[in-house]
Each structure stands twice: as structure tokens, then as C-alpha cells.
Image 1 (cartoon, rainbow, N blue to C red):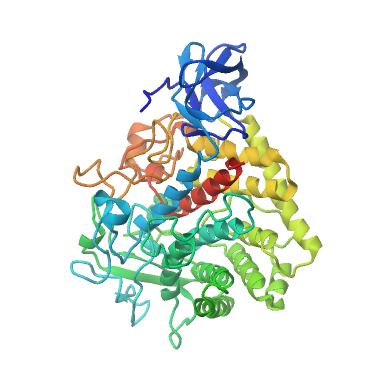
Image 2 (tube, rainbow, N blue to C red):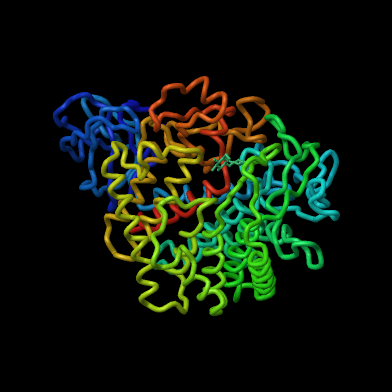
Length: 572
Ligand code: 9MR
């Protein structure tokens, strides 16, 4: 409804909450501060001040100033920030400013479901499609899937779950972290007081299970958990209790490719210790979350978790190859000490058994070590820490305090990074790698938790600064979330939301997060179009650029967590 503003003023394009920080970055070559005004929709100046000269920003190559208009606590729509005679995009200031983002980032998962029709009544007709991969021709999966030759001599019903990303593979390690982040957001929401305590209540989302009496975020997570459980090697088979690493097409399909018309053979790839431990961790988390909601399902999860743990201990070094990437992603990982730590933490919190606390104490990731600021699908020790630090358990209070403190220590390092960046992002200029948007989310989670543990608002503000970056306060002035802001990504790499290549198909739905800048230029479009880019500018909204512009469940799950956090804080 509002015309676009000047691209030199980069801010959170959806807007800010009245009582939270409001910061922007402006490209301006002046070496001295310049004046700014905040104008309401009627054009009246409601706040003013001068910029802070930040200077050369290595990540972007831009010469920038920052603007802090936090002191304005009014509300409304159609605000614009004016600097040096230029006026920004219009934005909102309101307590509910992030509510729709939390909702739509979670809706992404329903859209990604395999093995179920996506209903027009729930998502609108452009996004509706028949069920994919239920063994109905021309599909050849996923109800009766063979292994790759030599891997097993039986077939598995591995229907359901979510498609990973723009491809239609299903990978246990990436499903694991994604489910965990949704369930962690749920567990956290139970401890929140005030308006957002029931942010994910039953009936809050447009999903088939709405109205069943169970929180919708749990319903969504369960769709994937049921798939993960199906990936466990059956009793009586070799490597029983382990999990197959992944299931995907024999060869890469092109774009577009509707799920229900995929004719490739689908195959199970060998079990791995990493996948087995992801199953153990998430199934243990499932067992405690559903304990009173659905005791039968909780027991199923706990049994699977314990079987997986035992199988991983018996097969501790079965690694998925990093080069197994024909027809699907590799998700290879040769260090599973962190997956062991995470699984032991989840099992300990759920069962209280000393088997797991002893294991934790002797792990290289034990309370005496530091926690990595990079957590993600290959790096999961922080997930164990977060659970140990936030869910009541039997560890001594001093061990709990040590674990919380190391998250705070890492949050301090992230604040230092934010303060050196022209755009307030918790990424150093050498840290724009594949899935950088997901990295930003996950680092923001550590900051948010440090705020919870210490009560210090500087950490909360760091987490919100990360969200500002994703929503437009960045060197490209682009919101990486479809449908949010004035200028946003809409041609993400996806086989069904492939409007750029086929006008009969839709663009990605609102709430889809693009992977973001990747300075390694890992696809042909990026290499052809982005040569010489400053790290934060190594991004292109083109469907062919899978290394900068794909969507993925593990990136959107982090966005759900962060958006829910921001919505909670914005509610006041
Ligand atoms: O997110 C993954 C990233 O960390 C890796 O560097 C990259 C290359 O191996 O793969 C990413 O995951 C992709 C997966 O392999 C296949 N489905 C799409 C995923 C997102 O691009």
C-alpha cells in the first residue's frame, strides 16, 4: 500500500515494537554525523537526531552510518525514516509486529509435507497439490523403498515427513535439528508468561490437525517425527536400531518438478551413527513433550530413542560420506562426538538415568568445555546444552550454572561481532557460508538464551538485531523472508514453487526464508552473476542459485524460534 522508499536506508522492513530497540543503517559518504527524522504516516516528524558514523564495513564494502531511534515509543503504520533528504520504506511500530512472521514461518512446514495432499482450503489454491511420494505412479517411493544396492535386502515404508528444501530428499540429520528447534520453541513457550504463552495453541495454524486438542506446533513436528521413526532399522535386521541416513531420488531432478510427478527411483542410503543419534535425541525430546499429551506416542518415542542410543553405542563410527551427493545432498559428518553429547543430554533430561549423566560427564563437550557459536546440522552439542540449561533435570545446580554461563560467554562474543558490523549482524565478514541466514537465526538463539539467563537486555537486543538483518537491515536492503517487508526474496530454489521457470506454478509462500549470502559462490548462477562480491552481497534472488537462495527446513525452524521470541518480547 505504501510506495517503496530509498534503497540507501536499510532497516527492518516489517518494523519494530514500541518498547524495543529501533535501529537502521544508512549508506552515506559523509565523514561527520548527519541529521535524521522519523516521520509518521501523515509526514509529521515525531523524532529526530543525528547518525553515528560507522565508516567502512568490511562485510559489505559499504561506508555506513547507523541510526538509533529507539527513544520513540509511539505506535502506528506508515512510519518512514528520513536521512539526508531520502526517505526509507514505510514500516510499522506495534506490539504485534512479529506475530504473523512466527505464524507463517511455521506454516512453511505444512507446505513442505510429503505423503499428504496440501489442501487449497488451508493454503489457497496456488499452493495446493496432490500428495507426493505415496507410491502412486509415476512416483516410486516412499511407501516401499529399497536400499541402494548392497545396503539392505528389504524395503521400508518411509512415507511422510517434510521435503528437506528445494529438493525432495528426506534426510534424518536435517530433520532432527529442525524438529528439535520446533519442539524447543514449544518447550520454551510453556515457560513464557503473558500474551505469548500459548503462541502455538491448537487452532492457531492452518493445518489439517487444527482443532484436535494438541498444540499446532506439536502436530507439525509430529508429522516429521513419524517419518524419523520409520527410518529406524527394524528389529532382527543387521544394524537394528540405527537410522538410515537418508532417502532420496536416484538422480537429481530438474526444476520444476512437482512431487507427485517425480518418476525417479527413491532409495535408502546406509545407516549412519549421526542419523541414529539425531533420532535418539529427538525421540527422547518427543517422549517428554508428549508424556501427558499422548502417553502412547511418548512411549513409542522413548523406546525408539533408547534403541537408537544402544545401536549408536554399538556402532559409534559409521560415517555418512560427504561425497554421496548424487540425487540428494550428502549431509556427511565425520565427527559425531557432538551428536553423542546431544543425544545423551536429551535422554538424560527425559529419563534421569545415570547412564546418560555419566556419559555427559566424560564427553569432550562436557560442562568444562566451551560451546561453539556455530550450531547447525553437523554441530549439535549446543542443542544438548540448551536442553540441559532450560529444561528441569537432575544435574547439580553448579553444573547447570556452568552450562548456562558458557552460553552467556558465547553470547558476549556474538555481541562483540555485532558491534563491529555496520549492519548489526552476528556474523563476521568471513562467516557468510551456505545457509548464512540459518546461522544468523541460531546465533540469535544463543543471544536470546543469554538474555533469559542473565536478565540483561543487551543480549535480547542482539537477538533482535539479528532479526533486523534478516528482514532488510542488510547490504542488499532485502528481506530474506518471502512476503515480509517491501523488497523480499521470492524466487528461492524450489521444485514446486518454481514460478520463475514456469508461470503456472507459485512463488514461495509467505514465511519462506532464503539461505542468504554465501561468499564461496557454490553454484553456476552465483559464479556468473556475483563474481567479486563483498561477502554480505553474495546473494541473488534467482531460482538457479541453490547455494545462496534455497529454502530449507533447518533454516525455517530457526526462524520460527527467533520470530516467536521476538513476538514474545514485542508483546510487552
Ligand atoms: O545446508 C547444507 C549446507 O550446510 C551444505 O554446505 C550444503 C552442501 O553440502 O548442503 C546444504 O544442504 C542442502 C542439502 O545438501 C540438500 N537439500 C538442500 C539443502 C540446502 O541447500
